[in-house]
Image 1 (cartoon, rainbow, N blue to C red):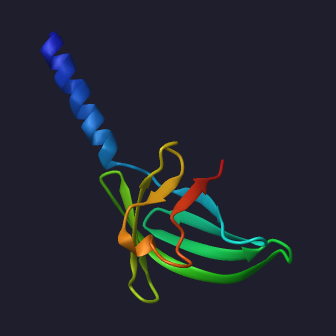
Image 2 (image 1 turned 120 degrees about the vertical axis):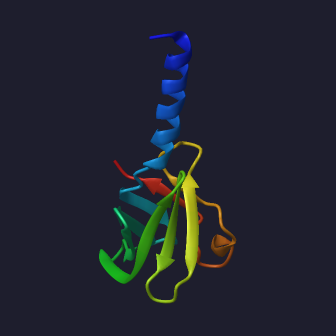
Length: 115
């Protein structure tokens, strides 16, 4: 195989790798002294549970549709249709909000991926 074909093949594989980002997993964000938010992403659906760590109980749960696009994941609330756009954080494990919808009181701008 010629060098040019190898370079083209490597470029194509790299481009396609970005199309199949899998954001599935568990992410956590501290929201207060005794509270954390737990984000569970499974394919095209996601949920956020707010947990009181002192009482070890779930305080509330929100459900979202998850749409994966070019290195980003778009979460759309099933309750009110509000949309949040995240991409990989600098550590390439966590998520960082890149939409204006995360700029406000109570919104979570970063999530840390759990092993």
